[in-house]
Amino acid sequence: MSRVVVIATGGTIASAGRGDDGAVAMHNASDLLTGAPVDDVEVIGRDLFTIGSFLLRHHELRLLAEAVTEELRRDGVDGVVVTHGTDTMEESAYLLSLVGDGEKPVVLTGAQRTADQPDTDGPRNLRDAIAVAASPHTRGCGALIVFAGGIYDPARTRKHHTIATGPFRTGDGGPVGTVRDGHVSLTARPVRPAPLPVPGPRFDETRVDVVTVHPGADAALARAAVEAGARGVVLAGTGVGNGNHALLDWTREAVPSGTVVGLSTRVPEGPVVPIYGNGGGVDLVAAGALVLGGVPLFHSRLLLALLLSTGEDVTQEVVDRYL
Image 1 (cartoon, one colour):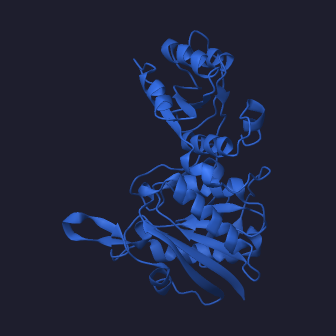
Image 2 (cartoon, rainbow, N blue to C red):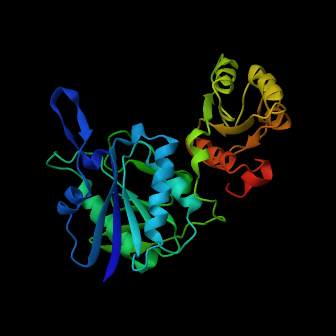
Image 3 (cartoon, rainbow, N blue to C red):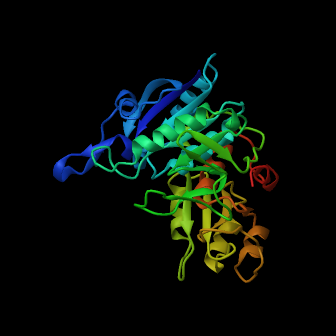
């Protein structure tokens, strides 16, 4: 019999209403497992946090990575499931995919409907996630998101709908598999780059901010981010990754002074491709901005923060390993 550890962190799957105060995460791992019994897998629960994922900081992300790594290294554990809020599940899953170095799968899941709703989707998602974590087919896949019967590679997966029970979508692709009634089927396997180290305490305070380009945008927010302590700024460019003259001038000042500037896009799908001059992507790259390819915007922010926290010189060559 396979053995799976379920690490509970809160989120909608653990939430219930408190009248006018709204829904709040309150259920622990034991509560969740009682509501989602499985017969053919030994399941062990562990509580890490009980909060909404909109409250997570780098500190909690680091503690999650440490907890998952600890459980994966235990003899007799075949996989780990993390119950998590959907608001920032994509970032936690991506972090775990970047630092995972073993064969045992890590599966993140949650719910879009609170635990006290009669049609809550949490128990089914949890049973599916346990089946995926216990399956021999997912060994070597690293971190995965399992939701509404789909299995997703975190590297390009984002939450694309606020309330739908199937909220995740993979840019320029689809799920890598499905799970139904405990049966796991994979149609593709994630490509896994060489793992990064599990983040250390420096990650907690490594600040990287996002500045969105829009008509009339200037460099005030980018400058304010650096003044507030940001070591990196990701520009959410228009189209294929374009800025404007104000942000180009700022980039020309910021990069030589030690700020890492990443070039992403505010467009949901498609890669950054420097094509345009006159303040566009070609000029920003010439000024030292790093092209972040098809990595989603907030994944890009997390990637730069993790790289910066290691103390490594963050160059285009380093970033390219994860694009």
